[in-house]
Length: 267
Image (cartoon, rainbow, N blue to C red; front, side, top):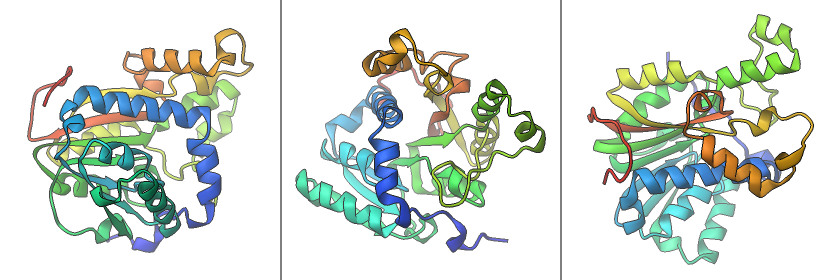
């Protein structure tokens, strides 16, 4: 049975809080830096412009506007009207409005069209039926196209609670955040996501972890007191195992119908 659209999380009432906690913090800067590096290195054609890109759950538009700045055509979708209003104001401020199409509504209401690149960052874990989105990602992607998928890592959440001694949460599998907050409701494991992607004809060809150590730090000492040093170390270890697997978020870059692994400069 299909999930009623209205059950998926809408951040209309949390826009200011979201902007401050997610993008205005050390955590947000790490996330954006890793994602921008990954996309620039693995899909260098993005910087040449001319690609047709869909940003599902684009929120305040940080990634969409960044990609639009290179001359790509971006469709930014979000279920939150308030977020899109703020993103559109910023796009006009940066002179990028002509490169962007805005779509307010759940991803289920997007038209059936295929794109060169599909961006879907920090959406999966807020959905009642995440598998439904993974199937649609494949449908939105052109043959040989790319999907950039970022999701909240359930395995890292287990480790975090082990370190804190929250054993009852682990025994009860109680990892869901509180409604109305910014902790995701449905964290997912990388193994589950990769298996589901494979069933929909998508191969994960690049992985990185986001916040692979900084979230686990208790008392900040030494370099952990310096934001720039933390960012440099996060970037260094974000694409090394075993650190990828313990990132608070995991970034998968997928290709449709392609069976080769990415190293760099694939386009």
